[in-house]
Image (cartoon, rainbow, N blue to C red):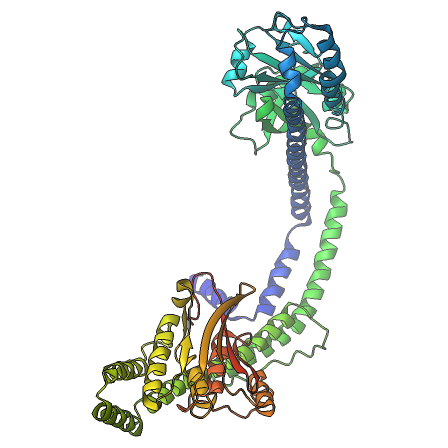
Amino acid sequence: MKKLLTTLRRLYRNAPISQKLFLAFSLMIAIPAIVVSSLFIRSQENQLYKEAMAEGSNHVARMNERLRSRLELLENASSTALTQKSFVDFIHSGMRGDGLRLVKFKQNQYEQMHNIIQSHAMISSLSFYVDNPDVYEIWPEIYHYSKFWPQDYWMTLRDEGGAAFRLFSFKDGADTLSYYRLVRLQGQQQRLPTIMEIRARHNVLFSDLLEDSGRDFFTVIMDSADASRSVYLPGHVFPQKAGEKLDDILSRTHEQLNVLEQKAPIEVHSGDQTYYALYRYIAPLNAYVVDIASRQALMKGPRDGYLLVIAITSSVLLLMLLLVSRMTRRIFRRLEKVLGSMRKVRRGQLDANIDTGLGANETGDEIDYVAVSYNSMLDEIQQLMTQVVDKQLIAKNAQLHSLHSQINSHFLYNALESIRMRAEVERQPAIAGALVSLGSLLRYSMQWRSDTVALSEELANIRSYIRFINFMEGGSTELSADLPPEVQRYRIPKMCMQPIVENAVHHAAPSGGSIQITISVRVENDSLLLIEIRDDGAGVAPRMLDSLQSVLRGDSDTPIISSSSGLGLDNVHKRLQLHYGTDCGLWISSVQGEYTCVTLRLPWENENLGGW
């Protein structure tokens, strides 16, 4: 028996996926229809429950947000009222002392406060309770503190930060919500602080929130401290059906409310019925918004039609078996093309693209998407391999050209002979400076530890080159490069600026004359660092300028060899574009007889520039 099971397991493992799918669907058809129908009905009930809970949870969350928004409106109204400082100051003063002041107060400050109250539709009334023996109680907005109850409530407000909501107000507790706020006046010493009370009637504040929209859930606003203090819509179908059991349902629900756990539904049993409740705690109101529904109402889907379900299930499964048998053959024929291409790639044939047969605007299905992505991957692999080789060749070429030009024996011989002869003829201390400059040039070009250097290092090498060239040729080339310190620390490709300066020295200066070379930087669109190397020399002829710009745009294959070192502008341009993309590189502008400006475009990053 064990040997048979091992054989069957091996046969199944080695069988094609199409045969495995066929076997799986065959086993599904063999399942008794009654089991399928039972599972279907049970899954339907579970789905109904999940959907109902999701709907209830979303509704409770929306209710919570909308109610908090309305409470914020009341808070904003109170803040607006307290901005009327002249009103507040007057009710704390001697209101009985001057009748003319009282008339002016009525016409100005009082009317402004009255307009503020009337501009908020939810506010039914607003009152100030002032511990002032001279207060004049002729308007419902102004009372002596003795009219407020309970007298010591101001201490509760103080402990709660100076403001608090009550679901049932002290004055009209049956059907009114109130917002109480301490009014503190600088420089006034009352025995008791002033309290402002804003009242909003339940039928206005909660009217559209509690309306019956035909849902299975019944919405209740419950005081966290007292289950009997609740706000709901009496005309809702739920309380009508619950009848006398409503108080018991609300009480049992209130017992399970928890501020810390507000996600899972509560299950409540009352009589022979089971109820589910979802809720959120409203901290400012110290209350809960609760959605309650009976299990019977949520699970009221059809429970009959078992035979119909069995017949439909069997028919569908048989049809699925026929369709799967046909479709799997078509699908796996296309997958075989993918597998065949992979085998070729594994043997080293990177151009083994898959023929999808798709048109220009066709996307195809998932297998087509895999084939198209696979073809794109092969193309990208070939491009990346080419780019890697090109990068290595160009970097090595730049390094070799630089080393070759800088340590060329003829160059060294002429340089040292010029220094020696000048030392014999003039006996000038400039020899020391020339030797330092030459040493700097040699060290910079011979030490190629990395493809990038700090901008300050490249700039220092250029300064050494200018000093040495002036010494060698007796010229007066001047270099101006006053760059910010934060720019000089960024890294740029090595020897990307020196060929441009060298080109300016050899080609821009008039015979026997001198030039001024200026190096400046600026940032463009927070994405590119532009290094401009500008000289005031002879400039470039228009035809030559057009030719140079054509090469830099990629419209011409003719290389540019502009510097005596052989490290041409074309080489620098290609290095920049290969490492940083087509947005980077060189650009040349010139006016013959006036100037030439070469601009290096490099990526500008927040913390680093130039590394690859």
